[in-house]
Amino acid sequence: MNWIDLRSDTVTLPTDEMRFAMANAEVGDDVYEDDPTVIRLERLAASILGKESALFVPSGTFGNQLSILTHTLRGDEVIIPASNHIIVHEAGASAVIAGVQMRTLDCEDGMPSVERIYSAIRGEDLHYPRTGLICLENAHSSGRVLPIQYMENVYKLAKSNHVPLHLDGARIFNAAISLKVKPSEIASYADSVMFCLSKGLGAPIGSMLVGTEEFVRRARKGRKIMGGALRQVGIIAAAGIVALEKMIDRLHEDHENARYLSSLMEDIPGVKVMEDRLDINMVFFRLEDHAKNPGLIVDRMLSKGIKINPPEGYEWRFVTNLNVSRQDIERAVDEFGKALKSECQIPHG
Ligand SMILES: *Cc1c(COP(=O)(O)O)cnc(C)c1O
Image (cartoon, rainbow, N blue to C red; front, top):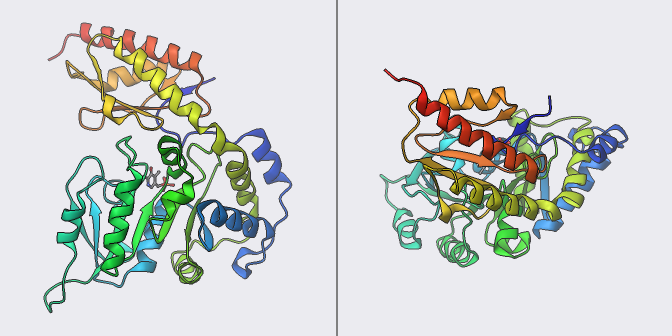
């Protein structure tokens, strides 16, 4: 079946060119730092982000948690917006792996004011944990992009207080397109950056962690500790190279498609799109009359060949990606409108 999948951009399938590159990749043992394809990918990633060095990691969660492990000491405090992926969607890993305390700042958009971050940085006191790290996320999971000026201001604050800054840049290329800057400009306001090869860029597996040579050398050891040192991983890295060389330039299409999707959704009575959160390839919306049984809508869509996630809280999210065409969008919106109508007719209680 030819599915239309709007659940995420993680669902993208590797392109034929990726599969060909994987089948033909020159490989070696990457634990010996002997895999030429991994070395190429790591150099390419570092150069695109304007950093000294890069490390291939199995997933985005792995890269974020490895970065926290590398920057901090056990018992340190990490300052981070409460709505970030590291807090909400990484299963509490920072407590398990790095053994750090998370100082979460409540805010929906991932942009606590510089003053709030400043007040969260601890001074010297026997009772206080050490402030070990500040984390930001760009693009943010809420669908918004953090402005360059904000990143610069937080980075300056971090530097003047000798606290490192890690950027969860799972979708840094989407952020760069939205901000009309190079990804390296965003990365210049962070000491380390994680980004995903396996989301909008379409690679099947993998993320990159970039930073200084010294940071990456230490992270390499942490990756071994976490069980993420892989052997002939050039097989996977080969797809990552195609992702970086061929797939960045088409991401703007996903953004345009998301706006097209949002405009069609707005025409369905009872749908309220969050218009202030349309910076990347995500459309968030609510229903004026909350669906009493969202599962029925999800199931009905599935029966029409369309995969969507149930809402988180009352919030629904559709994500465009390289496997979703304009025609797919038109069909999905049409079916969603019908599913809403039929849900309303089901007697409840
Ligand atoms: C997807 C994502 C991650 C983690 O990536 P996985 O490969 O799924 O572990 C981290 N941060 C953000 C913002 C993400 O969207």
